[in-house]
Length: 523
Image 1 (cartoon, helix red, strand yellow):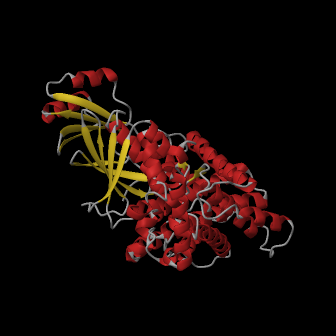
Image 2 (cartoon, rainbow, N blue to C red; image 1 turned 135 degrees about the vertical axis):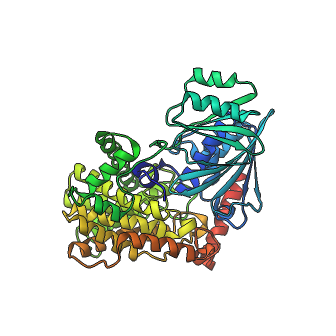
Image 3 (cartoon, helix red, strand yellow; image 1 turned 90 degrees about the vertical axis):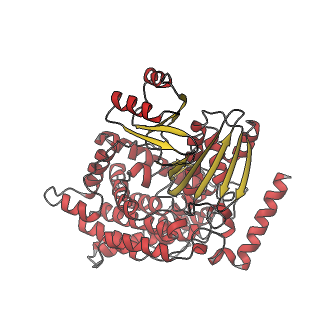
């Protein structure tokens, strides 16, 4: 069980592109690759396992774009990302892709070999969902890097001498010796190591070079992360004497997890709220982007809603459909969105929560509290399960979004802590078994429909909880069940173009047309 951060693992990254586990995660991997080569990259070999998800989705879902942006040192929200391949060519970096059997069988595995005129380095990393990554090997030695700290690698033929010198100077830091194709000492620190001390290390006999891999996550990690609780049951026990509201418990958690103040957490969440609101406004103005399946569907919906030509869904439901659609269209047109908890499910939770806020005239302050609630529910999921559709199907993405939104909506309605947890449990129960079968290898359809369904599910479960429906199964147990169910879903139904709707005749026609468009564009 890991210790997720609301802003690392759940509500973020702030990004462009169709998929957080492809675009944002690969960009973060690329950034670490750039640091490993000290910014001097001439050629790159990228290998995918033929049985993994990336073999069929890396181009269409933005892994290539993200990697290229990372090699160039960009952020995940950089406006140049859609033209990343052109910028890579201008930078003189040669890129090659190969499908080869890899020892690591995670469906989102990157094996990357980087070279220049004087050296070659290799890195193996996996995308774990929602933009999060884990580097598992550097230069033939097993490591554990998630991009949450400074990773200083000291290459030397006398690892013990370097290890002992560093431990004597900074005894409280994590220092590990690695012996793979090259020998090096790995130093993990929350702060960058002082340049004077780095020079001292460089002068130790046998040291050939030092590389500093900078953090790629917004919330850094300490050596021994402490949190007040990590499961829903633990939270309820923690709160037995305190009687805090769920949003306050989220504050308690994130302050301790990140070592930051309440004011800093609230300010970060306000920024997330503002970006989500901007995405809705941008989507409702209409979006344009050539390389996508669906055009701006929400414009007609908005016109008919304002003209009272839709079936009355109450004050909230039709607004939810509108907001979810707008966010998803911004995502599909390379606009800026918040992965919440992923890019593929970025519309469900924000669309549901902010539609309730606007429909009921709720204040921005309460909206920010609701997003904290959603973030904490997401922490429970991230700690015991996954947000990656490649691992757990769409239940891990849209199902998680519905779960987070349901609890947040109950809070907006003035419900109790028990009712918020009840709503979350019922929403996730309703999502079990959802597959991921993107049409044409694009994260557009049936993703839009499923985001709308997830948001509608959240609203329904929120009202059921407010009416004291019995959820029967504790939230922690439902989360564990989701993970088990995900492992039971065939890999062809977990974010590939090998099953479900993606292999229908109509979908194959769409895929062929998209392929022709790419061919003629490249010509």
